[in-house]
Image: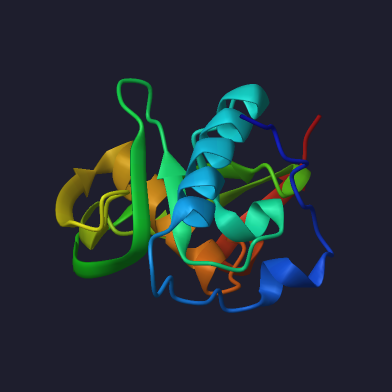
Length: 151
């Protein structure tokens, strides 16, 4: 597969609302495979399609024990609150403290077009919220309580 160049601010694709995937075809499967390869090459936790210049509602997340692929993800339940440090491959050298829900339930489609639903807490919940924000043109500094430059 291929490793894409990660799009960084101020590229306008990062601020667009990504388009819903209407049909899972070879192109969508190729994007998923390449997003996986790009995520691992960048040593990231999650990646949304707009971060590789593709304005589609697709995310991949790997919290360290499994690759999660989701097409047209949406948060259907939120609970609690957590505040923690975040960074982003598309906003290099910046970190910030963001408030997020402690627990979320997310539904979407897997690569076979089957509806899936996942419940996530803590770091995985944060990752889902961060990546789904990307699909709506929202970057973590938009939600950060405080940010700072970091190398």
